[in-house]
Length: 100
Image 1 (cartoon, rainbow, N blue to C red):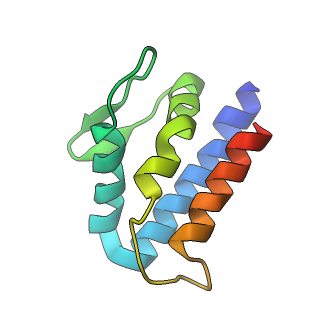
Image 2 (cartoon, helix red, strand yellow):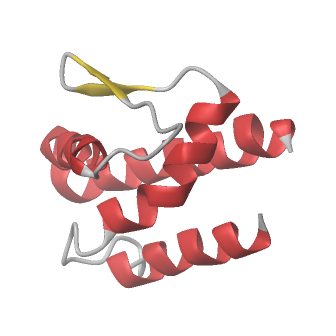
């Protein structure tokens, strides 16, 4: 599971950041980070927002983000990017969470 956290999900998160950058620029990436940090904390959730950018260090951090990322992405953009809509992106996160 450690490799899934640091490999697959890390790549998925980085790819999502690139999609957000293509769709809405750096502001949309920052909006995603802000939304993640606004989610009420629960036991074990440690999100560090340094200088407006989310800092992820360990596999456990990725596991926690995996649980809440779909909520931060929901409705974050309206346009489609290479035929990818926000709804399809959220569906990808839901399916990944189910598989995980």
